[in-house]
Image (cartoon, rainbow, N blue to C red; front, side, top):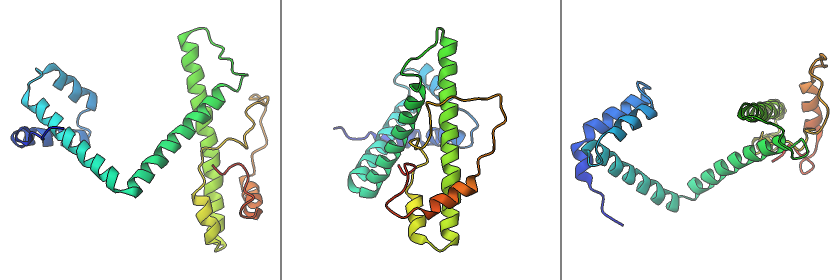
Length: 197
């Protein structure tokens, strides 16, 4: 462990603020800043000041992380959400008996983008159901049910048939979301369907 060299930060504070404001106002991009700083010599004062400033920010964050149980829980929840999304993407990608069928890099990219689109459609569908269900619970004064709905993740797919046959040429009957919400609202606590994550 070494002591922070704050003299670099103090002497270059104006430049650090200029960089931060440029990024905050979107006057420039991170990649532009990084490429410009990379072109400078290793011992450039602004570059060294940014390293020192970054070390201070990281140290403060780690100390806060150690001391704050709520911060640790929020970080863990965010990690879990990200992992749930990646599990959904993997499930979609491997729906074809685990076989990835593409011959070129373009087909691989197309496969990836299609699985992202399907994942986002599932999340949108779930979020729509959950939003309407929450509004329904709140309008009925069921605050306990509303609190439970707020804990449900929209990244769930147990109720989605990923292995069926899909027809995109036919005009399907629209999904009656309100009817689904009414059915979900009748389910008692403790017997929720697989939509709960």
